[in-house]
Image (tube, rainbow over all chains, first blue to last red; front, side, top):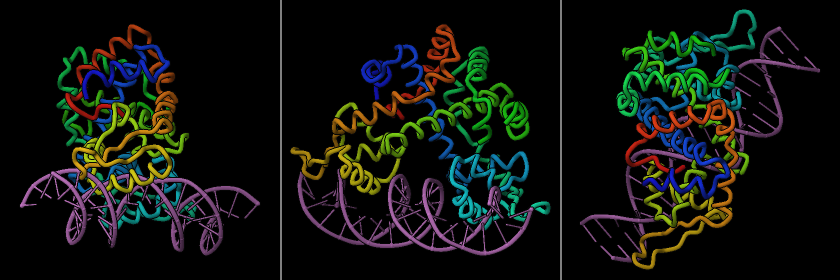
Length: 157
Length: 157
DNA sequence: TATTGTTATACTCTATAACTATA
DNA sequence: TATAGTTATAGAGTATAACAATA
């Protein structure tokens, strides 16, 4: 697409002030590029986006299935199959919690952790669009993003 | 999550310089929140993310199926079912190109356009994280994002 | 009785491969 | 022969609902 995308369209379909509309559109474009980059990096290590999300969430320690469902914002019933597939590939383990045997604690294996770290390290987004900015500009961007980060989630990923 | 997410983790799993690692992590968190917001807005209008992407792409005019596949970065075979479902709901029309009858031109209907515009207008991302920034800060953010936008895609959406 | 996780079902999105109809 | 789109198939992710085990 050309300039039209973020210069003309928002004015037509957006009642927001032009500056906000433009920032929204630009942020969306860069975010999409980031997500594409993430998916590609995950695919290079035979992981789906959701599998990578789960491994990222498990970096800080074992988590019950319920926690994974909340993190992924999906129904708990889906986690069963998701963990099944990851367990079968040796990316995670599933063990009943000794204090409440209803709960299953999911833990990333060494392979799981290494896989996620390879995905995250493999993001070219850091070298490409971010690399176009100077140190001073990256500091400015960091400070602006700190103001935009949601209080709770989506957290790691 | 707490500060740990973007203060400690990158240093451990990232060989990038700390500033780049931090910006990467922050940008990822905000992007995830944006995507969540987009999915929610689309769901409120009974659209999937991919259906909304397609409608966005069609705002600038009719497009052949092949173009939709490129925009969505998926195999052309998937577009058939995607367009089938959208056509059945009156969101798009599908007509053979008079100049090359192999090509099917997909056009957003009034309902399709209105649906996407409702999704885009319904994004609370503009009011929430973006609203936390002053006009001056949004101008700064805009200028930084302009430097990061990929030359071609992902364009509209 | 409430909660955690599971199963069953149906739908959307995805890649692969074989097919058709045009060119 | 090459290209645009389709069909068939298998797999991943999703929501809903009914269920088992545990609390």
